[in-house]
Image 1 (tube, rainbow, N blue to C red):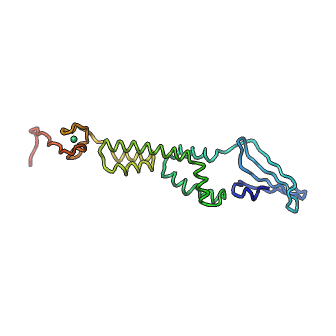
Image 2: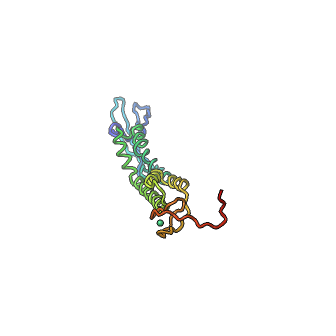
Image 3: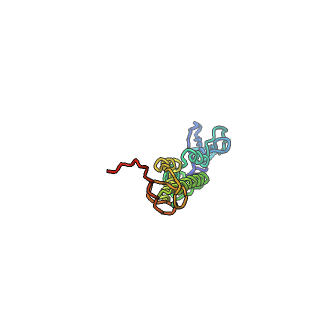
Length: 207
Ligand SMILES: [Zn+2]
C-alpha cells in the first residue's frame, strides 16, 4: 500500500465501510494525461490488505505546474514578483501542503516547475531595460543604470513609469559639434561646450 510511500504527494484519502467487515480506502494519486489516478485498497478487520486496484478515471486534467507557470508569466511578467513567487510563496506553499518536506526541497521543485517561464520573463525584462537604457542615453539623462535596474525589476509597469517620469526633451543641433542634443542646459551634453547666448532681436526689455 502506498500511503506512507507517497506521504508528500498524496492528494486525498477516503475510507468507506463496506459492511462486510471490510474497509475500502480510496487514495487519489494525482493525474495522468487522460484523467485522474486512483488506488483502491480493501482492508479486513485486522488492517491487512485483501485486494488492491489501480483505477484511471477519464476526465478533467488540471494544468501541470509548468503550464501554470507559463500562465502566470503571461499575466505577470514582472521579475520582482517572480522573485517573491520563486523564493518565498511557492516553496512555502509546497511545505504547507505537505508536497515537499523542507523549504530547500520546495525551492528546487519550484525552480524545476517554472524555470522556462522564469527565464523568459527575465529575458523579456532585460530587453525592456535595454529599451529604457538606449532612450536614456539618447536623451542624455543622468542615472541611466538605476533606471535600467528599475525597469528590469518591474517589467512593463516599470517601463511605463519610466516614460512618464522621463518625458522626451526637444533636441537641437549643437553649434560646436553638430550633434542633436537637448537644449535644457547651458552646455552641450556631447562636447561640453557652452551654448552661445541667443541673438538679440531688438524687442528685449531690460529692467
Ligand atoms: Zn556639442
